[in-house]
Amino acid sequence: MRGENLREGKKAEGLRYSFQLKGKLVEIKTDWKEHRNLYLPVQKHTSRIIKLTSFPYPPLIGDAVVSNLKDVEIGVRTADCAPVVALGEEWFGVAHVGWRGLLSGILGNFIEVLSKYEPVENLFIFIGPCAKACCYEVGEEFMDLFPGHIEEREGRLFMDLQRAVESELKRLGVKMIGLYEHCTICSDIFPSFRRDRTESRFLTSVRIFEPISSEV
Image (cartoon, rainbow, N blue to C red; front, side, top):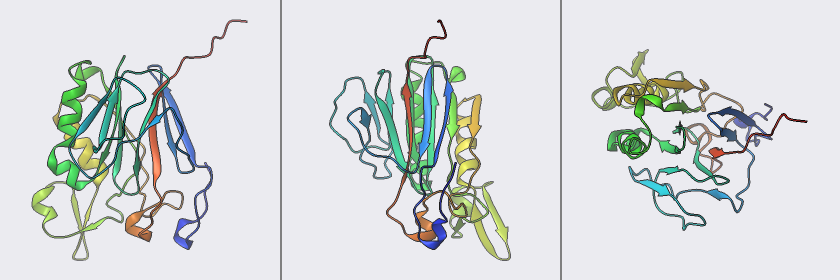
């Protein structure tokens, strides 16, 4: 990974993190372009899930996508909210989860749709970089909205969005969860709306790929 210091108004260059699991390729990219096999929802901090079973497909308002299509990449754009990727045997999904979406039940809807095709206990969930308690200052109303996920320091309140998402997923029955523990606000390699009021976003995406044969 390499990136420029976004606090000085520079753009991250070429940040790309990827891993393979269950025949899926998960990628985080700060430098990306839309392409003909990429599906992105129209994100509005909703709890709506888009089920993608054919492609091309019109961009719809929603903050999560689930699919079983090969050769189609699905993704969400974030800049402090949590990107959440779900991987099953055949179905996979990606969700954009901010505090509003968390309250409106997007994770419950996301897991409910996937559970129609994959046992919840077999899902692997990946939670990407987002605003964390080191930097994410919130108001007093968050004490009641997210009990257990608010830290108080010197009379100020801070929320760990990533841990709140993790806690809700566990409550929903998810057993396998991985975290990419970077705070977007204080990291120099991710765009952050809280830090810079930037219009830049990074893409978290997932697709099924065909492994390259090792046979000679």
